[in-house]
Amino acid sequence: MHTWDVLLIGGASGLGKSRAAARLAAQRGAFTVEFDDVVAALQAATTAETHPGLHHFRAPQDGPGASPGADQVLELQIATAHALDDALLGVVRNRLTVDVPAVVEGDYLTPAAATRCAAEADRQGRRVRAVFLHEADPERISANYAHREPDRGPQSERAAVSAHYSTWLAGQARAHGLPVVDCRPYGTLAERMATALG
Image (tube, rainbow, N blue to C red; front, side):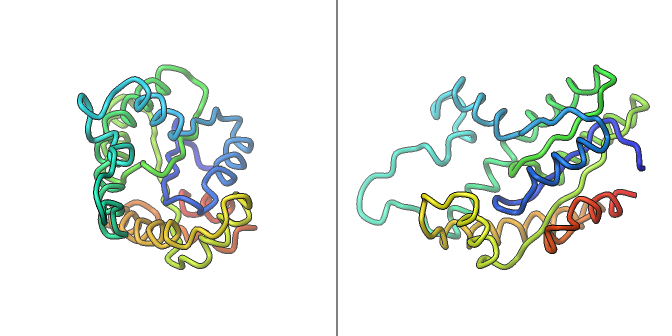
């Protein structure tokens, strides 16, 4: 089994990151960090006035047509992810102070930040690896949402944005030389991720 001190699992919403992270963490005896929890904590501890990059989706929308379109939502999602790059570095630095391996997974992990984390860890003689999941079909993502959140009804617009964000993340990951793994078939996802990391 390939060794790592911290494994970063990135990808858009609705791709099965949490399940795959849990399986890989169990195989390795690793601690799991859901980066969404870090994001929620940062948003609770800041305001849109002090940290606007963390509150793009909490700002009030006023007037007709104020609700952002899909392209704008994608831009805001990317901007939010970049605003959290330093937070990811902080989480990884903290995890590297202990000997228990960790898996960090979330929507807002960027390939650029993952590359920074790996480089810093390497200078310490530690190993940070990253893998990004990908799904370009919004209908598949919408079906995942329906299975995971049946009470919320159809979420086709959210799924469309997620598919576009997934494509952006995959392109960025490849540009940084990081592995990209198709999330389907789900039954073999964890094994295929391990192979890609190896």
